[in-house]
Image 1 (tube, rainbow over the protein chains, first blue to last red):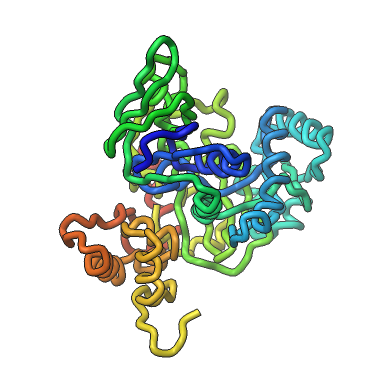
Image 2 (spheres, each protein chain N blue to C red):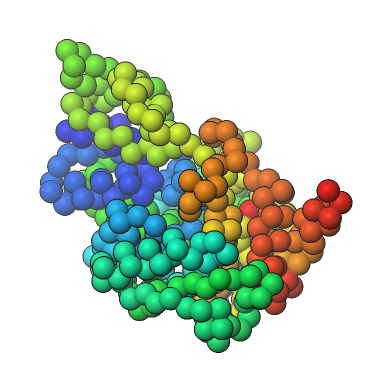
Length: 312
Length: 97
């Protein structure tokens, strides 16, 4: 193991690997530490969606620039990332119309192709959605815009890591950070399960564990992990659906292989639906979660009743 | 994809032993990493057929004792179950309440 480095990045998810890759392009000496395998935390549990369907200006801007970045990434990294532009359909449930109109205006003002759909329009675009049963008040779809796309999170992290390694980044998986030594307000050392690394710059990219890492040199940050709000189910592959609908109840997408990844959307509007769980690290799959997601999918798209769920 | 003479390990995703051995050589040395890299064990059977074989291959190629190689986490519903069947359970329990 390398014993000193200009920069030490803690965390081998999308953030850590992206930072490592970008720093390596600037010829900066980097070591990346990951306590499990790459994409071990939120990255490996995410739906792989780039989304302009957001309610805040900042989030829409992030979606747009991240969409633009991902569009060029396959070529740049010389790797298959299963990148696909995807049109998105988001359904408004009764009472949500006003928020939707606001989001549409925001997205339009930033150049996203988006339009409001009345329930009868939705029926036309997606006859398979049970619009009447779920009392859809309307919705919008985003079409042909790089701010709506999907990508395989594992392939992305792997390609970033491979490219970073090629430019000299050392990546140590299954290497946990045990402490960060500080002297006179300056970082001196990172202590790991594989020994010490001398450095003055640490990048905290530990995601759900970032507050624990920040605590090591005595910094308090207010991040807290809510594992289940981003959990998902995965079905067997099926024929392509033009749209997998989203709403304040559900999110989902169809992967390039035809499988549907879907989950409860209670994280979309946290002010209206606070997380039902205490913060923590318990990522064990729960049967209860699968039952609830199944009930929602069945209610929205009755024709998917016969499709098998493979895993949580 | 697979060529003649290859030994298929993961039938669901059509992955050959040769591909797994190559991945181990490239540094993917846990079942979880190989799964993420090659999609082994992500199909219908969820790795029931291939994961033990992959664990054996890792042990053979890296010299790590078999009992120290952990399988990836097992996630319900274990066998494929239709959405409609699972959804009904929630509806019924709502009615009972």
